[in-house]
Amino acid sequence: MKKVAIIVGSVRPNRRSKQVADWLRVQLLKSSSVQFDVVDLKKVDLPMLDEPQIPFTGLYAHAKTRKWSELVQSYDGFVFVFPQYNWGYPAVLKNAIDYLGKEWQGKPVSLVTFGGHGGSQAQAAMRLVVTGLKMKQMAVNPQISLMPNDSQATADYRLHTHDAEAALLRTEFENLLK
Ligand SMILES: Cc1cc2nc3c(=O)[nH]c(=O)nc-3n(C[C@H](O)[C@H](O)[C@H](O)COP(=O)(O)O)c2cc1C
Image 1 (spheres, rainbow, N blue to C red):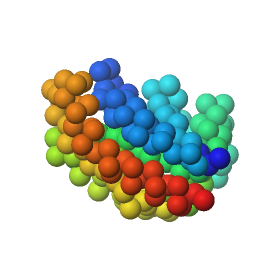
Image 2 (tube, helix red, strand yellow; image 1 turned 180 degrees about the vertical axis):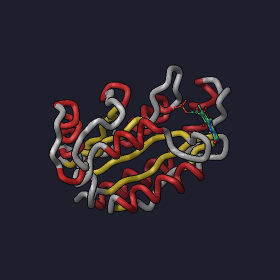
Image 3 (tube, rainbow, N blue to C red; image 1 turned 90 degrees about the vertical axis):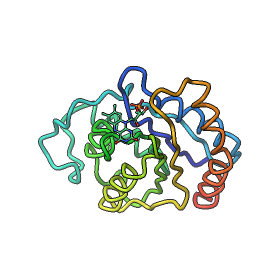
């Protein structure tokens, strides 16, 4: 079975991204042909990039990097779930991406952003990054409007207004990864 990682792209205490990733996983789990896993950068816990070689060499000095590389290689596609931070993306996500090179190339990626206005600037900024990495950009890239002071229940309600879009993403992955 093909596998897609839903990467949780923020790590601060009380973060919202885990709730968004968990909602998305429940929607995507309805697939019988693609397995969707949540990969939490908080658990991956990489230091700021500390590899002496350029990542595209694939020459990794540290066991943590090799483990991250193997994990990313084990997936056929990705969903990056991340909030907008000052019109950009969280540094922890960029750091995790920058650790590797060829592991990302050619693999499909969907960008799921959230913020007061759906995180459109964060999505635009990340689009440049994944273009540079030669990743395959999916057609479905949900932008979810969530307010920082939304209760968990309100955020959940807002998330469920995107259930149909999540179903489209599931179908897109199923068709692409046949
Ligand atoms: C450092 C920082 C910068 C932010 N910048 C923006 C922003 O530019 N636009 C926006 O709509 N929300 C912004 N927000 C609000 C976040 O989108 C919102 O708090 C979201 O829940 C953060 O995701 P997280 O909880 O997973 O960290 C910012 C929040 C933080 C912590």
